[in-house]
Length: 472
Image 1: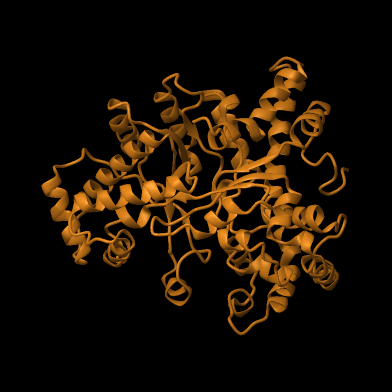
Image 2: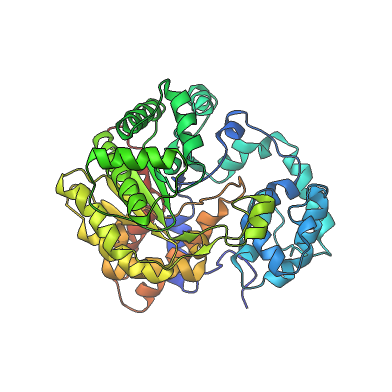
């Protein structure tokens, strides 16, 4: 029996062990998509306590705590201390066996706080609380210190087009900063015309650009200005969050003006109108990304805010979002083809929350490789409900069999937590397990420089070439 999270955790063959320890473990991290707060990095903030770090805003943990029978007051209650919430979390940790949170939580305890061998439960909770809080009070455990512990070289935050990017500027100008922090352009509010917040958002964007956005072409002008602003602050990527993939041929500008004005006024739009508007704006943006040499990421397939009572009480992103199962192949191929026909398809990363669409994503990516860059259209890593062992293994296996695993950009945290970076280790161990088994079974040559070179590319080099190469 192997020790829990021991040196060879997940590494079930000698080949896997050698691949991980000799090739993967020491590679730096390029975390090209996350939701960390740039202000926290700029100010190099220290954190109050482990309860706040672990539980404030972490809907993964909230969801699991509810499943384990914890009262909502001990999850999101405003009158409950973070120590009480932490003790509640610790008390149900034994119920998390088999859930990735069991691994993630203990990896964070071990890798950051030196608590190897401690198993979190109500019995160990006070000790864990005291040890973690004592370390969080030190300079080494500041926001930047935590990132440096994990050898993070680059971060891609997620930012609204209206953001002034003040904190990114501060980080870039700070001579003591040891990592690159790039903004990522997230324009969802500007094209999700069916949302009740659309009109207010257009007013906000109007104030930011300094002119009234009263028609479709003025919206494109405003977005172009914000793209330029993001570019001046080091942006190299955009991200579109799409609950479902909608696409149709782009209609005439006069029709888009009508739809824009109706949406801005709060009128209820038909599905056809919503599809037409989203398609037009995303085609425009795709061309702009290609012109600038940026990467376009598309996160597709969440069904959000399903529990209306919880949404009314707490708002979005509280652990009530699931996997949607709507059509993907046809609209996604049409969208990419529209850009490709004009030779305006940017480097693209596709993520599907529905794991049954993995093959669709991989084969769609394969349709649009053009030889200009390896893996120009990527099948992104297992996302959200799928960034666990089975989900990541499915994604990598299908990518290897239907595409080229060697061109894969690898792992990202997609997290709001400064303690989430051992997930890169989790991914790397799994990757080495898979490739090590191929070697052990004779599916690939027993050549460690060959396989190890691919491991290093997936862990770091491929993403570094896309997001850190200043020559682009």
